[in-house]
Length: 258
Image (cartoon, rainbow, N blue to C red; front, top):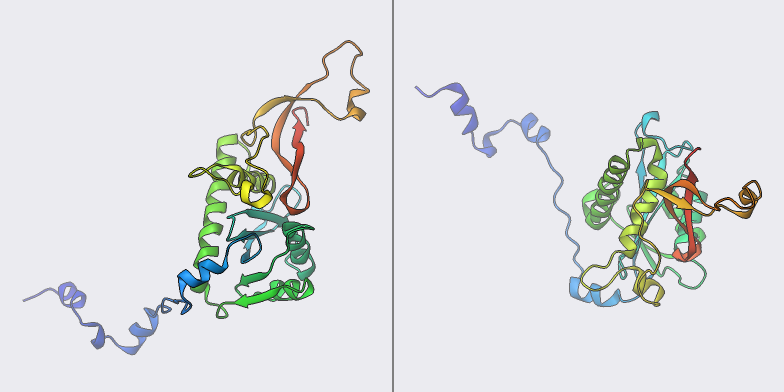
């Protein structure tokens, strides 16, 4: 006689009870009906298609050094330029500010694609950007966003682990990681080059959390001995990037003693 376990594993699916069928129900894979080649041809320059989504801290342990609980991940598909903007809230105003900083003053976002989150819908309408959405509550229809979110999360974890920093420093680490992605040269090109059209990043590529010597601002130099050294030890936290992802040569550094 066959064992009960053997029989259970060989019950055809059409013989399962309705409760089992409901418990094992999965969402059907969502496939966009648009021609991929045609859609790709439409995405040529920065702003042709941008996606955005929020990373949410699950509890107080995951909040940032300044109590940030959210991170808005924004991706431009033409250049693969990505940014993450840490925020303390998930409001439409904060989302609009992040999108405005992302596009800058000279390059406008033409079309945005989101998961239909209310704050994003309001922010996009506020900035008068064309909005394309997936089916509500169907994350499977935005696989590109899911992949970039996972990449940002895993990359930031690695950066923090390598630097020996606690997870609360994620707001600085995630921005450093995203900018490092943008300036990395892959297959002969970087996101930085097509985004700004002035060649690859020419600054120093310094890992997050590195111990460095830096020249402090003039306000701090006033307290230095006149014939003493004009540098001090510090920790690399990131790059100071202005509107539109522009870098003007400034690094974000914290004095080691702080």
